[in-house]
Length: 253
Image (cartoon, rainbow, N blue to C red; front, side, top):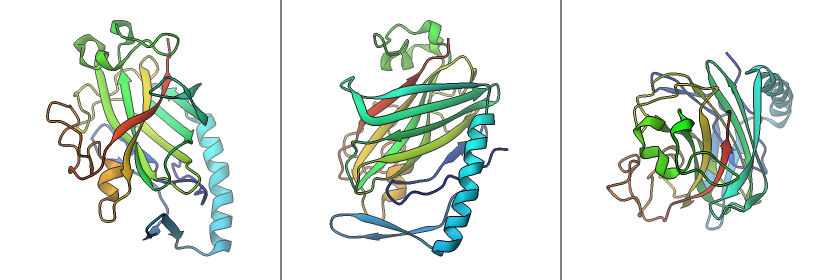
């Protein structure tokens, strides 16, 4: 099993790398943080001494580099796009795959400081059946999620609150097989053949007492997820406007 703990960077969002397993349970290795909310920002303070955290960080950094290299024989990289199909400034995504599953790392920017962000796996298990690709970017598009032959799936990946510099670092892995928390009941069928998109979703400003709901669910604190949306009911509605703002695409065929 690969160590999934990532070195925290105070200049980036607090992220909590997630492992989504076929039984639907989520496991993660994370540091213990506390947060202090003020009018203009959310600060995260690590409950470790500087000396200990530095030593642990050096060990973890080496572990992550080795883990990413050994996760699978195949590594893919992607630009990160806005939904206006423009490149997101200073952003890049990486995907590692093998027969057992997929692992991703996403570094992005141009995000609103203080916003709560959730990251989503969007999987097209049979991209050959897709009919709505984005020219020069993808073979599959959003309407293909509802074509049964595509065997699509959506699942939560990661989340966090954005720091003052507007940048975020996220990571997650997903195992091959069924996922009871998946939206369509198809799971991840073919890790090395599926077309996989990563979607960055903003839940607007982080709300005290609601942050977990915002970063771990699709509709958490949102006022604009309608009952006909497949993500309706995943999270408790609230006062914020939520929207998908960036995405990355990994084509494997």
